[in-house]
Image (cartoon, rainbow, N blue to C red; front, side, top):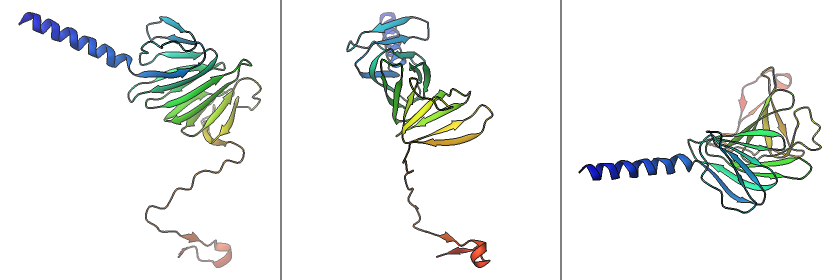
Length: 195
């Protein structure tokens, strides 16, 4: 009976360790990665080599090349590239491309990523957005939006949206099928909805 309890406890401990390290995943990667675990240990992964289990809260530096990174629900990570640290929220899938000039291109396909801006604020990169940092980026935020739009909060707490040139936000359909127009008071003195 005691042996069974010890074996069961060992199996539960082993399973809990697997769950704890299955939180952050690196898919394909063509460059060198430097993974810093929460306990401070650092692991360097060569281009194309197998990536070890990565614990929740780890930091992954994309030293060069391209890497696909995702977090599961309930886990988060930091990704470093282009001299910036990107805080990757739980349930996020992103791609990071770091080129020899020092610039990084970050594309978020699901979830959201937060990064500090050059002017002391923060930027929220949502799904569908692609941002370039470092290199020849000269905007006040230090970010160039390549695709989609991002939300910026400056150092004083003011919010704004920064969009890629030519970007048109998606049209959200009216779930009730009611389309209304409002006439301006200048043209009719009546501001009630018009069918």
